[in-house]
Image 1 (cartoon, helix red, strand yellow):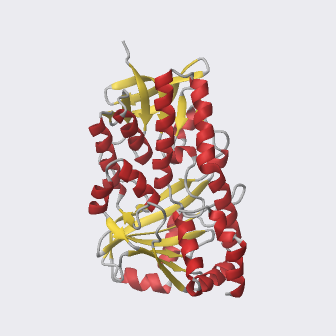
Image 2 (cartoon, rainbow, N blue to C red):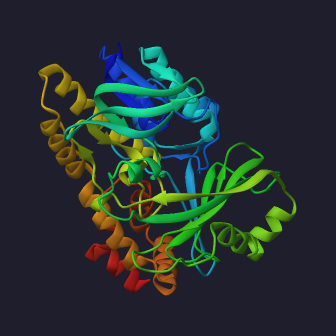
Image 3 (cartoon, helix red, strand yellow):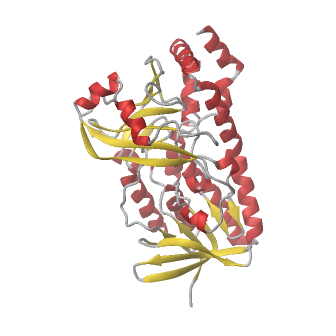
Length: 404
């Protein structure tokens, strides 16, 4: 007889593994599956914001992540005209006052192992092909493995499948065409000028977008570039690789990479950021992380949202399993909780992005940030997701820009 799990989670990235940990810690019967064997690489910028680190602290992983990764204490921002603006990571409540850069090859495996240590069951090389339905309810997934086809049944199913929408398309779960940004990154050794600050570059990249240099050690860095695409608009470049090549060809970066060695190939990847319009739940099924479009439309950051959405899902599912709530009610409550947690921020982020991402305005904002510490701190907090992004276009901030 096919076992019925409390929860089956598809995808063992940050959202899926952290959710598996939270639920297993509460004594739930959780099965976590992934199509890839671990550890495995995942193309990403590799940055962990203070918000992401706060959830990792809750998971009991902050010390291990900080020890394994590169601790970052500040940000260098380069405006479109090349003006540098520097600021330390600001203090904000009880959030860690630093960033960590840790390749996903390591981070995701740490999270997966933590889920297993909490009691979650795990199977890799299992690919979910479709959902299983019982009338209007989703009751698990249809999958394949090396041993043959599988039916994995559960009281609740969660998709934590990242930017890939193949499963959602097959299962007819999409509310509409998703919105994607595009990015590419490579690892460089011996780059020079690598410090304990990450770099955001607005020169030589299509806007809205940026290039980055995120140190992963004293001599190596994750170097990449990406941009966002508005609905109904053509891509700003033919490929993310073209965006990265253009960024690396600007004089500052060209001098640096000329002395460096690229470790491994350039890899491109999508960034799904349509959370405000995405369908987040169905009776028996929840979506978390980038599978729900949770990527910051300004910065491309998604790990903090993945971890935080797992917290929301864990609370909803634990309560549902305690009370035996109907799947329809669980879907409604989870959707409401996700909208309450993230919707306003996403809509405001898009307004801030559309307001600021003009070269002349970014240049003026950079000059204002160099002159005014409060403006500088606000910009950094907006970039890190620490504050309501609307504060970036408050009357006070607009006055700072006007004065210059």
